[in-house]
Image (cartoon, rainbow, N blue to C red; front, side):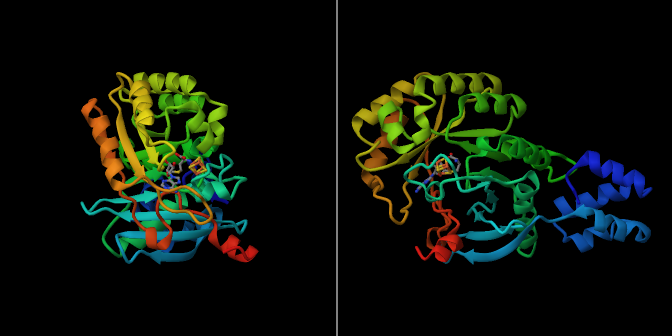
Length: 349
Ligand code: SAH
Ligand code: SF4
């Protein structure tokens, strides 16, 4: 089956079926931008070619396994199943301003195994294909159509480390920003990475306008290693070189994500280390309150201390925002995404 986003294969199919480019353009427009279901989008093709086209092209690669709507805020968690039977999660974030953001997964599980992250507890990662990443957006859009909403921002902050599945993520982003497909503005796409220096620089070159967010979480090497095992491989000075290079290429520094863990990375020494590390960078620091994960010993920083930490950064001239995670009641908040059904199957949840 040919994925609908594959221009080359689709061009060959079009010639084989003697299909004009215009109806195909309209079909893709109906499917990706108007958020119509495949049957409706197919009506854009002449009747004679419809069934042959439908048989050759895969419109979906995932099935919706379940949907969980938060009773607290505007989050909906979607659990999808791949053809191989793996479960993954995406989160629809209906932001109060009326914007809609989709948090997508790039892998099932994550090999980085950060101690504070539920996905990390799953260990071994399975890479999602480009079409599996895109179908999360297609299917969320189709659900949102009933609410007269559509995905406007895509953040790669779901399950997995996007830069460990670089090719599929890059291909997916090309389709997300392509005027022939979703047509989102590159600035409305954000990729969060644990910090893989050479991949960050490659990514910045390929997508100078797509946002990069770096999960720094500590500017002290020993502390960072304790909470992010991969930090051993990429010491902080090497990571800083990559930040500088990405900043030069993109004309702005990556967003710095900083998860606040009580007594671990929120002391005065941690703040001083962070200020020293960021130095002259005109960085935007996004402080992340910790979302509790079952079986994990971390405790989130108190609101008072969080505000002090934020004030320390602000007074040094940094732009600071505090992340407001949605969907805690349906385990859809940052770091809470996990293949829950698998755990149930094992009798551990
Ligand atoms: N692998 C990527 C993207 C997915 S995680 C990365 O690590 O950046 C998205 C964000 O959620 C990261 O900043 C991550 O550190 C954060 N996160 C993970 N576990 C969390 C938790 N328990 N509470 C709050 N944020 C968490
Ligand atoms: Fe992987 Fe990101 Fe979770 Fe770390 S925080 S285990 S890199 S998904």
